[in-house]
Length: 115
Length: 110
Image 1: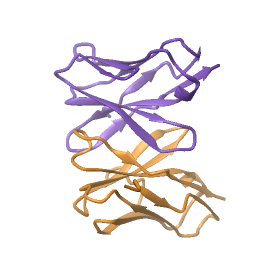
Image 2: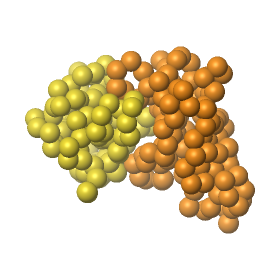
Image 3: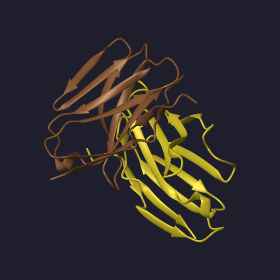
Image 4: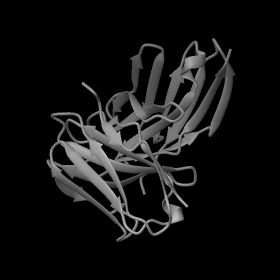
């Protein structure tokens, strides 16, 4: 299995631009998680899906952030408009069952820099 | 929020020594997981210990859980340079989400 795939690996953009991060979970996994990692705040859960349905988006920082999962093999996290404080590494993870009873498999991350 | 807090924040040891890192959490849990993150990479699951377990082993890793003290420890025996990474504990909360601590950065020098 190829594992969780994320693209792009690096993204540099200017403030105000739209940013779209992509994730392909491991085939057969029912849960997909989006995290953001910064030095100051550590690893924060943004949103997670079960069977393509968003379950908890309470971690999404504000309305500029949105996430979709149109099918079992693809999810996007969009930031519009982007701001410098959005600079972070964004991880996607998937798990076969619920994350608290099962292993989460992380992608390599997307390093986002907003200038 | 129910978040694991690792201690120490940073640890430097020599190859062959044992490394111990601790995790404390605030409320009752069903299980606790440990993950490793190499620089510039995603997190990799190491071990899961359930609330009714007190100790678990996996290779050179030994995890203990003390639910009365709301704490867990991860011991890496006979450390190697390849063990250099950040280590995170993660605890469950209502639903299926995990809450991660800020991690312990381990540096093993040869």
